[in-house]
Length: 322
Image (cartoon, rainbow, N blue to C red; front, side):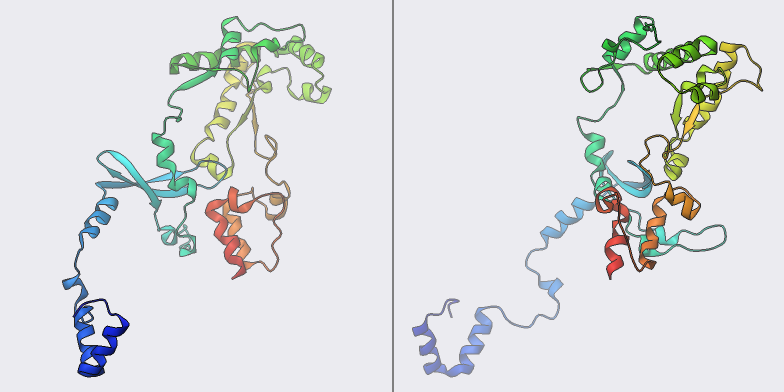
């Protein structure tokens, strides 16, 4: 029997063989027989091979993704033919235990955001910075011997941030530029002469007095946000302290008088964290505090776009309504 039925053919079939015969023929024609094992008779399973090949990998590794702020997500990268092909969550946050035996909740899984999923594009993208770069004006200022105006400020033509071009340099040259600039700044603002220059630049007397004559105190270093800094950039604080050796070299003072650079936290560096948070909770602002919203009766989001800036933790806010 043909698959297609016209109205006329349908009426003829009813008249000739009755509805039962029609139903039996339709079952056979349309392939409606009962199938006991669909996997054994599925017509084409080639798509499964393509699907498995798409997700196939040679080996995987766990790494910490910390693009900004305090996210710190443990992710798993999948490698095929020596290329990182995809990234996904570890799905093991719920297995974490502290020294007291307390176990985390699997509610933390899957912990990942869109930035983490797309990280492979950044790693292999043509816009990735794969070397040391310096602004042309700053490089010119260093090579000119650090010229300064009467008040101690560098000439403005050397500093055109946002409009200057970037020049690629070797790691050795970058280290030389940084080291020589730090040394020059510390020497310039050390002692009474340095204090006079800062006074001419309209710095407050209290600020100048707090330096105790050490030019190294003009150098500010930020070691990152609390948890992010522990895993990546707290070394900046150690480096700031080590500049006491430079102060000893410049001023000739002993270990008791030598001073390093200034270590700034995020509340005093770019002030994008709420000082009221540590005042109330007793600790600096970290993302794990955000999980507390599911225990809150009232949530007021003020001064931040949680969904876009705290993406791995956005689910705590969206699920708090459930």
